[in-house]
Image 1: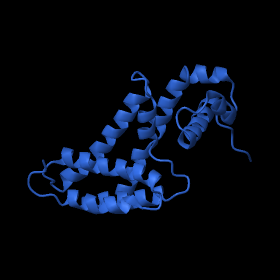
Image 2: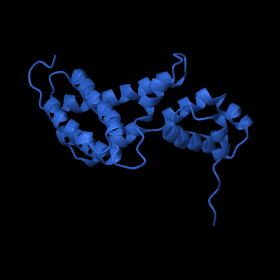
Image 3: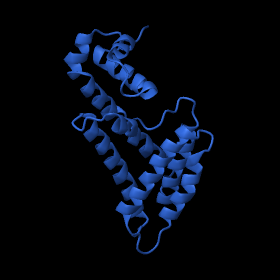
Amino acid sequence: MTTPRPGPRERLLDAARDLTYEHGVHVGVDAILKKADVARRSLYQHFGGKDELIAEVLRTTRTQERYRGVLEAAGDDPRARVLALFDELDRITGESTFHGCRHTAAEFTLTDPAHPAHPVVRAYKDDLHAIFAAELTRIEHPDPPFGADQLLVLIDGVLAHALTRPHARPALAAKALAGLILNAEGTAR
């Protein structure tokens, strides 16, 4: 029994997801078309062009769902839940296939301010912020939005630092700092 081959739209997304993570968002259209095994017409028919394909890749790469899964698996204690994310980041950044955060890389690389990927990246970061602010609210943190900003800075730092010093295990250092954020008392700012 054979499984049906995904349609051209799904093959384009899968190919672009793989190639842009490995080689960056400036990977050529021809490479994407070749890997997807589709005609150029399919790209324009389904996405209108490469820019919208890149935006859709970012929109459908649900990293925040992975984060939510880690939180859920860590139990009910918000502190333990957030700290578990740093353990997961340590695991992720130690993988040989790790190439950083695709959203941040796209934001830095796509210099056209009108590129459709920019609002997708910002929505992704806002979603992560909301996840962390909710956890901080549960522990009655003095300033959940500010604490969530701090956690995001740590996570972005981990993902960048792991690229430049892959054996440093920055998620472990960031986990200790996250503990300070989680245990904040009084005025945060």
